[in-house]
Length: 121
Image (cartoon, rainbow, N blue to C red; front, side, top):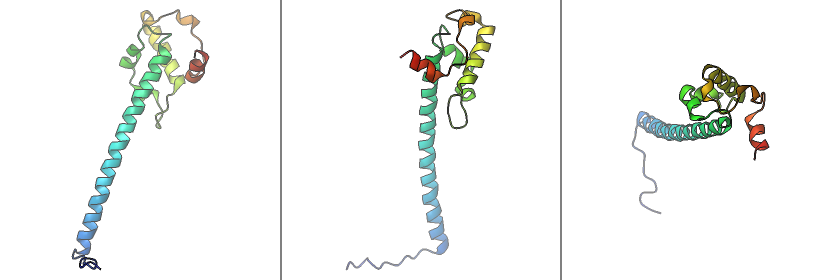
């Protein structure tokens, strides 16, 4: 048996509590950092999907995201609200028809992005 095997913890209960709280704070900061990285990656993926989705309607789909922040296009879980994208792009094309690639009247209505992407793959 090692001579340090029965070492006594000489910290007071308050010190032990403080040390435990410090470990939890550090763990929480690490977890928050990982969540921030995940949220950033999801936002970037969502921007890419929206740009891909709008490429048939807008000359430069990035214009849309300069005017409409990605945060306005997703639910609290980060899922894209495709109906909202459709409404907002319609509004944009009404205000700025020169952004359109094709005639706005011929744009298909009511399709989800997933259906749209599957139909064109």
